[in-house]
Image (cartoon, rainbow, N blue to C red; front, side, top):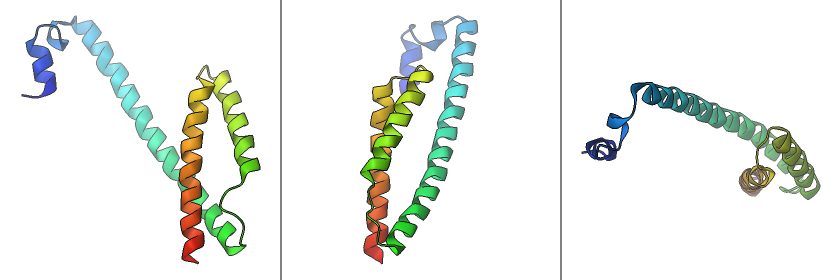
Length: 113
């Protein structure tokens, strides 16, 4: 029995929901799944670019981190988030997580040289 089966068996799950509501949930969840896939693909593309930056930095003995650039990017992303009606603090946390991963990659690239 899956968690969904248990949920249905209680009489409070999707089995007891109006079919129109269930259909709308499915439609919205399919959109969410598509957006999640797009986010993953966009992050993959972003990391391909940052890997190239890491190789360029390593080749020219530049530091893996660029605090000025990072601060500019955070400010820019916060503004974009505000304009998109997204919590800027959340957007900043997300970018900080991504930046930390990029720096880690850049350090690995530099160490491999």
